[in-house]
Structures are given as structure tokens and as C-alpha cells.
Length: 367
Image 1 (cartoon, rainbow, N blue to C red):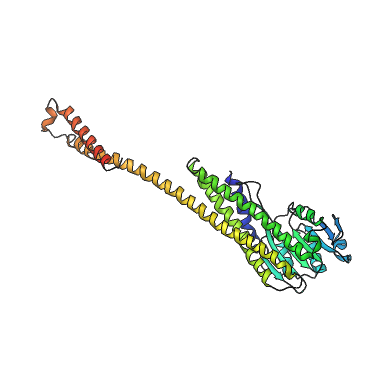
Image 2: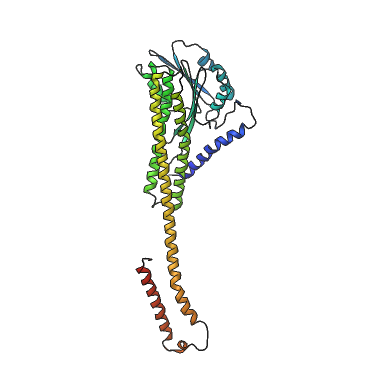
């Protein structure tokens, strides 16, 4: 498990919001500025047309084909990959009759997850989380969803493989996606992203369990690095997941003609999953804090034992130094200096003092 890579990625993530504030400083609200990393060379537009009878997929189409052309009798899912072309995003917003404040949220990849309701649309933005294995970097992309009548538009920073499962589900003629309006697809996108959170949280749990098992085997500096890495990862996941709970709760409570009341139960199911994740994250944070406390306590105990040993050694030498000091005063008349057995007697006395003190320390369980 390498802490350095994740530390670097967390620093990048933590600076994202600050960088956005500095870039937009002094500009009026609704200024279209892309905040974040450019993850694609150019924006691509894909579209899936579907109804209960037919499904058709179109790749790399033009904006005019996606939004200006009429597709009566079909539901549309338009996937827009790449957010760096602010002019194109602005054009899309005009064609969809979206406010610039909403487009500003789409372009700000450090935007806090939230939901907004317009006269003819529902807007939902949050983050995906990816992690290949426990201890590796947590990667994320922002996803923004705009739900309109017979239309769902998703904006994301890069190509997302997790949408492949939804693409396959749409192909099933008897599937719920095909039999419902785009509000069900709207739910399905949120659900599949939330399910991905479980995998990341599970990896974090595995990392904490592994650290707990190796707590007394790894070098001290590595243990501390891993504890800090887990703390940063859990905090990052918490900041990504917790606001989703509020957004979904608002989504369920707000009555909107675009969302079928019969589908609210599915959003409630996602809400339950998010609540479960919130509890798990808090539990893992407490476990990680507990491991940190154990580690610091162990370090303190080690230091106390070292100090105890040094204190015992110093205490033993205090009377020895006193005895030697007496006979090192160089007075002319010290009877033992000229006695035949003076030297061995001093050694016997000092040895007796040492043994007596060791016996006392042992009896009091200081050794």
C-alpha cells in the first residue's frame, strides 16, 4: 500500500474548490468557466433513442442532430463527454433553455452535490468514485443530469465505463427503463453511481482491516502514513457521499411532474443505501481513529519503557557515584586508602548496593 500517490491526489482534490474560487473572482454570477482538469481532447456527444419497442444508439453525433432534430415517440438519453469547451456547453444550455447559473455548476467540477428544480427540468449533480483496489488512488468524475420531458442529458468529464451496464439494460425490451419515461433512467444513473460508492467504501474497509492486522509488524513511519492516508480517503468519500443524501431526500419530497410518483420508491431505495454508507463511513472513521490512538499509545508506552530503563540505570549509579566521589576527594587522611583490602571492599560495597537496588526494583515490578 503506497501512501504517497494517494496523498498527491488528495492534495489535488482539496485544491480544486480553492482554484475555482480564484478563477471566478470578480466575475458576475453565471460566468461560464471550466473549473477542473481537462480529461478529454474534445467533447463527444452520444445518444440512445428508445421506447418500449425500439432502441437505437448513435455515436459521435452533432449537437444539431442530438437536440434540434425531432424524435417523436422516443425517449432520448444524450451523453455529453467532456466539459472544457465552455462555448459548446453554453450553446447546449441555450438549446435546452437552461439558466447560466446551472451551466456554471456543470462546468465547476468541484461543485458540491445538489439537486435543483426548474419549470421544465430537474438538475442533479454529484460525483462518481473509482478505486481499483484497497490502498490505491480514489479517482472521481463529476456527473450532472438534466431531466426534461422525454429527455435525459448527462454531462461528465470523461468516458464512464459504468454506463455500459445501463446501455445493456436499455436493450432488454421488457426492462423497466424501456417501459418507463426518462425519469426512471434518471433514477438508474443515480443508482449505479451510488452502487459504485459501495465498492470504494468496501476497499477502504479492507485497507483498515489490513492495517489493523499489520499494526505491530510495519515500520512506525509506514503505519502513520497509512493511517493518514485512510483518514484523507475517508474524509474525501464523506464529502462526496454525505451531500448526496440531502439531494436525494429533496428529490423525494419535491413534487414534480417530470418524476412519476410510482418511481419515488426507487429513489427511496437509493436514499436508504446512502444512509447505510453514511453510517459505514462514520464507523470506519472511528476505527481508523482507534487504530491511530492504539499506535500513539504504543509509541508512548515504548518511550515510557525506555525512560524507565534509563531512570533505573541512572538511579543505580547515584549511590555508586557517591561512594566513588568520597574516595576521589584526595584528602590526605582517608583510612581506607592505605588499607590492604580497601579497594576490593569498595567494589564489594558497590556490588552489594547494585544487587540490593535491583532486588528492590524487581520486587516492585519496575523491572
